[in-house]
Length: 181
Image (tube, rainbow, N blue to C red):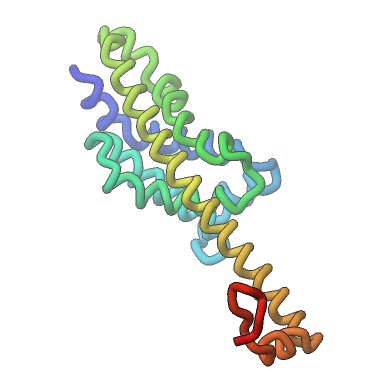
């Protein structure tokens, strides 16, 4: 038996455990809510994470194709990027897949003598984590860009209210020598 076959046959158990491990990264109250509330409108975070890790696991089984995996990672990481996670905590959920696989298949892997295939599988998880970090950084850059634009807009509105902007706009432009044209 190949490791890939074992991973496919045990998909449901591995994904369920992976989801539990991911939800454990949240505070206790949030974790209980995310686990219990199944309504996608009452619990969009839990629903999105659950749906997307299932898709991510399937994409992982098919190989690390950044064009296929990045959008899935993006939908999870967008949530984690705006929450109170450090960058390492935000992408650590990818590494939790290793733990889920070990917990669910550790004995079978040893008994089937598939241990030599584990480093290659874990390397694919590491590659997925690197992609996750790239996606996280793009999300954070976008958040900072939005915040910077909002700050500029607030300053502009304040200047307009104070009447300063209209005074500046009425002045004649100054050429390079500091003289008016």
